[in-house]
Length: 75
Ligand SMILES: [Zn+2]
Image (cartoon, rainbow, N blue to C red; front, side):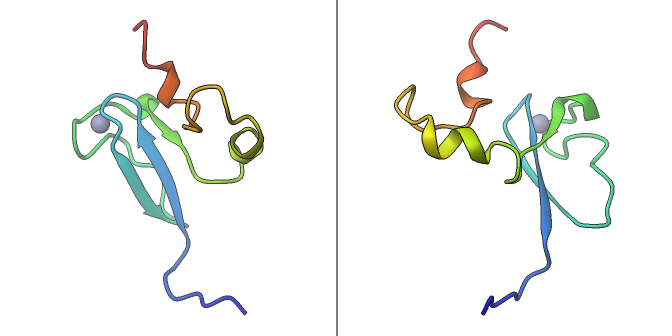
């Protein structure tokens, strides 16, 4: 009983500005960030399936944030 109303979307995040870009399945990864114009290598896939493991369990380190969130110091 899943009420699927909207089509599945792939989610990407721009590592430069943090913008979330949603792209429907079947569409290619965006070539650049529509917000800041960062090139494609700055855009990473962020939908579930990958970071799922560490998120639920590894809480207590920072605040339960996604891995890319705590990696913003330094560069
Ligand atoms: Zn951007």
